[in-house]
Image (cartoon, rainbow, N blue to C red; front, side, top):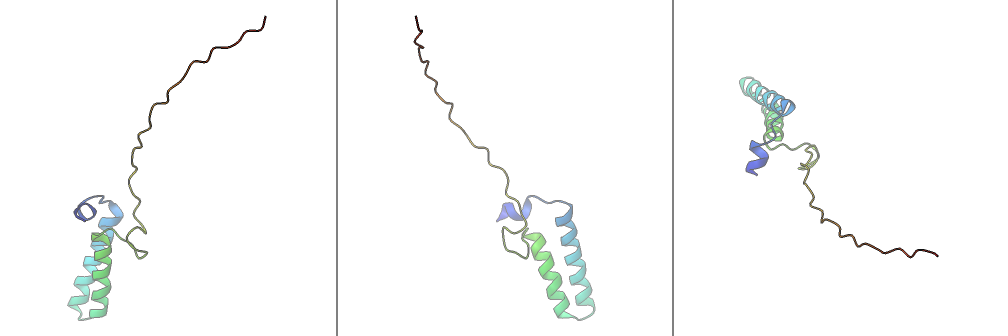
Length: 82
């Protein structure tokens, strides 16, 4: 969870967080609590790097390097025709 919050910050994630915080501040200044809930929701999706589709909806998992075993070759003797 700590890795999800602290890692992979890119421009759009920072932008979503800024929009969410600004919406929340504006909503609390003009007592509109439904609008504040929307701003908190937008901030939470940016903070936890989730989308509206769920945890894996928008984030692309990192590539895992696969280890392949080196194949063993066997030399085959050919039969020559006389």
